[in-house]
Length: 447
Image (cartoon, rainbow, N blue to C red):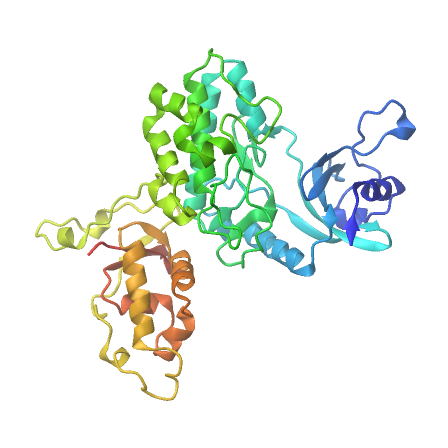
């Protein structure tokens, strides 16, 4: 089914929507300014695959209601949106600092178009906010250096949030980040919002060209898609804050471009903008981005770019073996974290003998010692650097790289899951978490 903007406007004007399900006052859709009242249409903001209208709730709040445009998404899309919404609204998701994700709900019977009920995504209307692109350009023109520096810090905190949690976003750009008048930022566009517990959607969007790696995969969503766009945005904001009062070729009419364009990213070594940035004090950042954009893949590029969280390093095994080694009790856990634990000392540091022989019992059909070895080898190759990561993310990446079903492999070898595989390996492993989930995060030490 094709959804046309004119059909949506007609349905709104005719009252063909479920105000109860949408939790709005009937007839409260905001009206755009028109020459004649009878010719006025509801105010809207149109995007590539949807359109947002604005209406009022009985308690006086304003909601943004997004309807699809073009092809009506299938049930799998709406089911995924519901899952994202449920996880996002869970209390456990708000356990790390301020949550910059805008909450939303899926309303299945929202509006009637051509005799069929059409779903909608409903979220708060961020009235006090402007897009990141608009805010940055406004503050630059007004010479407000401190405000730009506040935005840079807010973007850095967004990066820390995405690194610390299991969220990712496939389309971070100046038009999808909203900035309030007091500097708080909100990340919108739930279509490309990702969570490690939910299957990724088909790749329909590649991110805005001014923020997307030139060789981003069109077949699958790679890990940590947020890193490159945020590093690009922070570089631009920091650069503008350093040249307040000078003439700079910003993009005045495009919410999704500030300074950097897709031309700079496709050929970074020839970019006059990158060259100018490097000459004016941003050489390290420019060199990282230039090298990252020259990589053949996002995983390769992400290894070059600086991360947002610099972990307090867990001592490597050589330090742990020294006489005056620091007690683990001296480590300060991050906010909302209660413990940092080493795996039990009586757990073996090598693969048990029972795992070195195939054919033990009737359940040894698909899992083999070689599978365990490949998992351990992949973990050592990719993650043995002492950094603390979500255990579920590590497992997901290893499964993706090896094609091995970790849970099934562990079960067939008499183990409960990925944590057991790590604990029964030769890896030097520490776990960190809360009381209810002591293995939430893992650090694998260099060997």
